[in-house]
Image 1 (cartoon, one colour):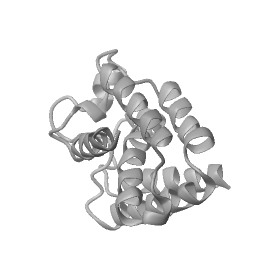
Image 2 (image 1 turned 180 degrees about the vertical axis):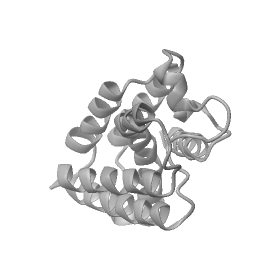
Image 3 (image 1 turned 120 degrees about the vertical axis):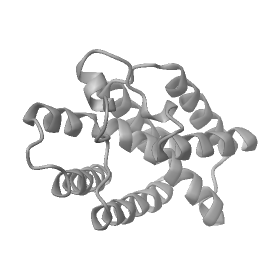
Length: 169
């Protein structure tokens, strides 16, 4: 069930990014954007966990969970090029080993709701339109870690979640 919810979330995010994007976008860039979506999902997961912990006292994180998440966040922040395979492994660890089933259900519900919000808005997804996008940087072998970029919402949200979790530790 967790995998199905994640697949639905990723699918909705992909629809959001492609339905409002330029129709002339390079197919290779579109394909890479889809491949990299798991990295963005990992960053969003931390934001959803923070929301859950703040708003749902009965689903509050244990000390051990906080320590595991802080450790993972620190690893993420140290990496200049976060590969989809690594992000997927970290997401699986969060889903299978760190969060309890009721916590995961709440977080998945948030993910679906936020994906729907992104679909209904401007469609600014994983990349940017001007200059060298993060996706293009990745394709060129350059750095790629959207959680380090605090000029973008994903980076700001990740930093806020990391700071929140670190303060709880």
